[in-house]
Image (cartoon, rainbow, N blue to C red; front, side, top):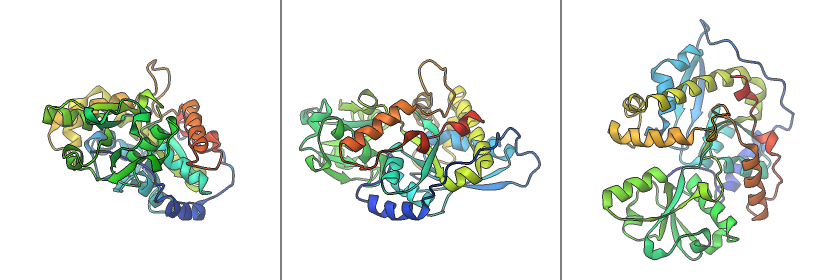
Length: 342
């Protein structure tokens, strides 16, 4: 019931793969991708997720079941992963064409000499939360000092949300104890941990199921980094831009349908998801992620657009906190070029 991203215990393993996948050549001009798949033979696209299939990923499943991938000449393959870091590691190892990762995963890859590229901002608004028992007294990032905090895994975005909050408070990972719980809320509910890094939708479910009131540190209130982005390798970015554009076009259609028809999207999603099988419950999650899919409140930006200012702030914070040493050239590693060509 939590979520995503890279590794700092696994960062060394990722770094080795990243170094092997690095390619320093600048991006070549990309095709416009204006035509749909038409009558061409379907081209397989392997998509590695940070997770097993989940109800919140309705946009992917809508695109599959309603034929949006097929219309773009794509044979879509979903490859499950175990955290954002694992997804990026699989991407860099050549086991997938597109990875479902958090932006922090890309920061760490750059720091290790790798060259992954964020190509689509699937959830621009952070939907992460650190939920805690009131008696733990966690009301601000500085209050995390000395606490035991559950995370999905040591290679997950839930861990990196904690690291981000710690960095904002001038704290380090050594100032807390992180415990990998998987998606099981039992350690938190049994008070074996003081807090649990999860999603706001998970926290809402826990409060509804238990009747308890929990404190929450909402990541978006402190640094609103994207919950997730789609990434690819530099080689794919330069050689297979036309395929990627067609894939992103199908995903955008799925996202638009998910937002406009959340009940119908829920009916589709539960046929694929392993976490939620009740459409009514899935619809609540889908509505929350529909909101997280919107680039900003004004509606002026297209779906999938990166806010480079926020990403620069995240990279600066990670460097100043000592989480990475490299200075991340955000414009190189997060590109709006493909989104502009959809």
